[in-house]
Length: 236
Image (cartoon, rainbow, N blue to C red):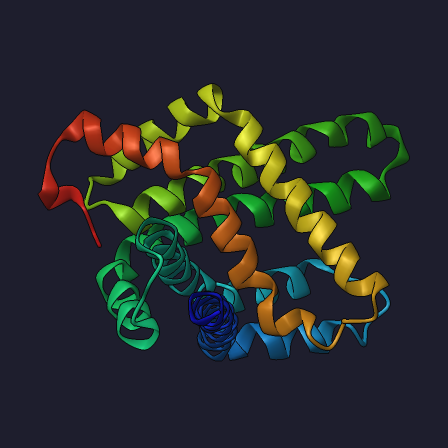
């Protein structure tokens, strides 16, 4: 009976910890991205989106890069060790990966912005409707590469060209990870909306998705660690 109670208390304590970690990590993520939130909410009031609005939105999203990398870093540690010091680990990872995160995120934002502008142009010219498949493909490639670049960056100290080369290689080898991750995010979003948890959605969504991404990327990160066999490359 006592053992059963201890087990029950252990399970409840673990569940509480995970809920707290997901909640606080998500809070830190959004706090660091307040400019983006205001711009995104402001754009909701407009019926049409023009080029200038897209550029402003993309510029305001630049802080997402280091915040997202920090979130992936602590979620990766959680998948490996089952325990984190949420505040210390988050802001340490934020500081350590800040410059590289801004570089990769800004590069991706530039590509996505150009692709989005091209889509608007093609949509406004019916004779070019078929050509819009090109920016759509470009957007998907960028998003798919993101699923490898930032998890690798959150885990290892590597040169930018090495991170990019590894991301491309694993994009080809494990494209199913990207597809499953996007599908999981889409399913989670719809579940929260359909069960009327739309208010709770912003509190947990990003951290849960990052946890699932790092869970699915675990084998890739182990492969890279074995390949380099260098503890200096490990972030956490």
